[in-house]
Image 1 (spheres, rainbow, N blue to C red):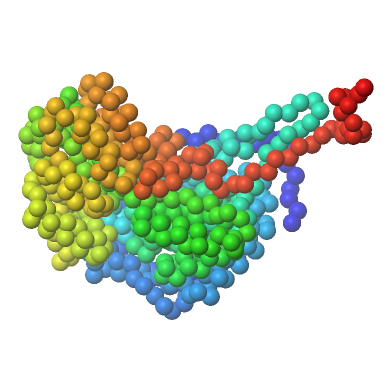
Image 2 (image 1 turned 135 degrees about the vertical axis):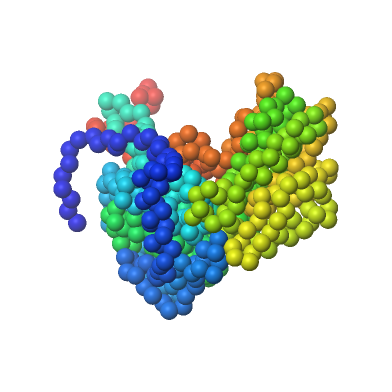
Length: 544
């Protein structure tokens, strides 16, 4: 293929964070979104497999339900067959022959256009799909499906520009260059239910760097994932660069992870699934063309630890917001808290008062702060945790569970005197915050407890007005969280401001929304061009 010539050093538009809309009563944005919600709630759409740009209806289908009204079917999706997964790998290879040779600026233009489409004509659709399909309130949908995904697309382009501009030293005798090549083969992107933006970024970031992708979206986020796929197509993403493969995760992974051309995995999900993927790759190392890049963000048991000097009101707000926004289903949601005995009566009282004001229900009612958990499996697991708390701890507030219409778990605070109690240790992924009250004099001991209680290290927060206490927490908990917050809840990372990811059992800490993540999707080639080549093999030291 021939390309139009272009001479000049191109610079991408400077990335800035997308402003968060308020959807205040009486605003035009609120009315437009409510109208889009009402229309989409009447639809039951068909979601196909997409391979090389072709929409394929296999006839073997699953359903997408509204978590707030689980009798409502929002979509029927067609499941990929093993033959189609292999066909998708072939389609990706065919697309790579062209896409990998595009100038990076032309690839960037696709994602910049996608960002602008999402800012304007696609915003209501992605927000409404996220609200209906994933039970996010209007605010949670706006900061995720709109703002964060827009930020991923725009900031990734800027980070790519920065990366490509990193070049080695040269002098008058030679020109040294780094060629940031796409990986050989395909990237397997596996995305979770809880963030529409992650659904766009996990396939999008490798594609921006010239790679081709097999995208396996979560079955419980298929509505928003399907609209994200269509957004990328409208923005000009060529057929086959991203292949959309809903269906049986085990079957798709078995084929993708054992294929010779697997170049990388971009994953967000459970630690157990990521571990099994890593094991599969390890067993098959002898057959890959190259060592696959394995990038994952997995589980978390995110903490808040308060010093006796902490502001009680700030702490209470941080606990309630951090634990209960999006029903505690954020990777970063506060799940355990350690509060000094001197503060706990005041903090408990204020938490209970705030929780009493929180409304829970269908997210289409904009007055609701809390929606439903994602599906019946999550509801059953969390109800079991509440039953355990009744038997072995104290439920301070909440504790209700009702799946008669939607999968509703009431925001709950559990108190325990046992720092090893299972709800302080196990990942729950729901609106349950377990509090351990500690003796004020045991600050350093409680820091050690926080560090060793969980195998995870994703997010955490310290509340203290005493700066020395902050420094002590910074040191003691240095390896305990990849994103650490001081006097703030441990959620709400913003692209370009707080690169996100954790280590230990929480993943590879490759920081989504940063240049370091993009670095995983290229393989550098060093090029040395000598302007005048030597003509004599002898070196001066050989002289008599």
